Length: 289
Image (cartoon, rainbow, N blue to C red; front, side, top):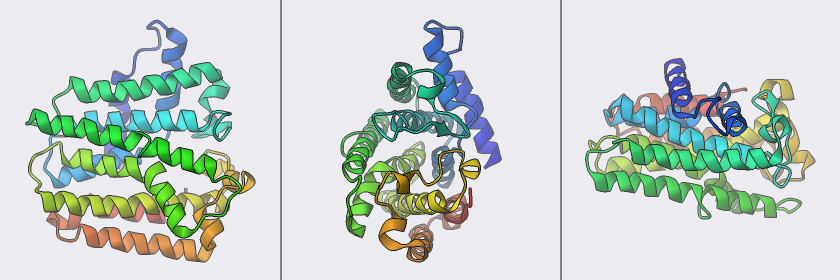
């Protein structure tokens, strides 16, 4: 994990515009929002899936940075007053607090554009048609039928009671879509995997994406702000439906464990049982920070 996290941090530092390039304030805010924070779970998943496919690490590095640009943009926008109105992210003031709302909005816009610029500027697949498919996968994961749509459902659900299937539908989009894209893009940096293997990886990613959110909900109600690096208890105070509010702590923890086992079963037939993907499923479910 440390090796991949360090590599991705260094690559992001190269791909992001330098602080002294005009417009300086926007580029400073870009680097503030992206660098020096987060666990880089999506890059880790991309590298792990790419390892199963024996993909070139240089290709995985580009894909990982594109994914992290999308993730960082989503956090910057999610924290805005018109969304979740949060003031703390990765243990420091959110982008709109440190700079201003207009700059934070432009940071998100710029990061989304940079993600697709990276996918277009670098050769990531031997077949151009497969690289176009990678662009489509990321675009679909980000849009109204993916992450943005999940956020819209989330905002509309404030103060309402959701059933478990409705909650899963929301998070399959809001959180799960980009996690699925991370695994899919990493695997497609090599042409070595067939349709069945790619389907197994997608089944794994669906389970891991939901498990990630279940554990996030548990941590939100059980951990401190200092531990999380973001405002703890925000979902409950905002009257948002979560896995904890729908299931309770015990059943939510049981669900996370079930999803972890399903993720392992999905990749059992892959080389080395999916290798690091299994370890990442364990990390995602068993993490306490």
